[in-house]
Structure formats: C-alpha cells, structure tokens
Image (cartoon, rainbow, N blue to C red; front, side, top):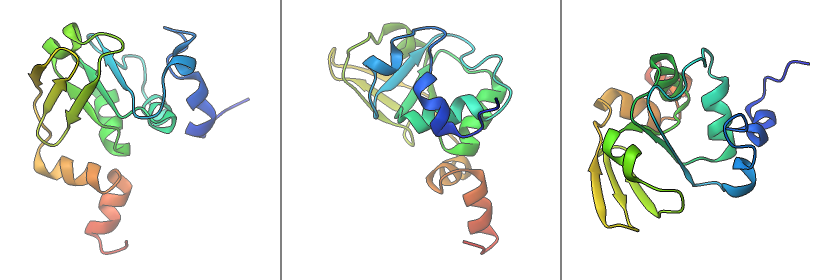
Length: 141
C-alpha cells in the first residue's frame, strides 16, 4: 500500500518519536526540535504531512537541507533558532512572525531571533509554495 496524500499521513505525524503526538497536538501548534530536523526525509511527504496536520511552524536548531527546501516548496513555515529550540518547553505559549524571524515565548517572556527568509522565498511561501508562486509569476494563476 502506497500512501501519497498528506491528509492520509497527517494522523501519523511524529509517531516514531512520540506515538501520542497527534492525540496531544492540535492545529496551530508548533514543533520545536533539535539539530538536523527532517534528516532522512528526501521527499515532500514529511513536511506535507506536518502541514496537513495543521502544525503552524517548526522551530529547530537546524534543518536537513532537503527538508528545509521541501518545506519552503510547500509553504510550511520553519525557523532555525538554536536558542529558542533549546529553551522553549512543551506547553509554552509561543507567537511566531516568520517574515520577521521573531519568536516570543509568551509563557517566559523571552524573545528569540531567527534568520528570516529572503524576500523572494517569503513571496513563495505567501503564495502557498513553489507551484503557486511559479504560476503567479508566469501569469497562470
């Protein structure tokens, strides 16, 4: 059986690390992770499933390069912030501005910085990903 639709994979997001993840998490929640998040994920399947589940943003120390690119291609908000990834705790209320690269942990009051994406990548994400961005740029949307 091959599952290709992100919505079919969404109920299984992160189950290899935390089998209860989808029972605890809800749309709009964030994933806060360590180094090289997404390593081993060579297709858009993993970020697409995370997005289909409704995760609002992934904050990590660092991302595997292909996961980062696939996330941008499908407009899954991600931010690299080693300090935020180390300090934010499960249950903290966090506000993120991806375009400015700012993260506020409202629970602790601590602010973090992440490098925002270049303007054209922000446009791509605002358009809903690479395909929508290309269609818009080519006048096909």
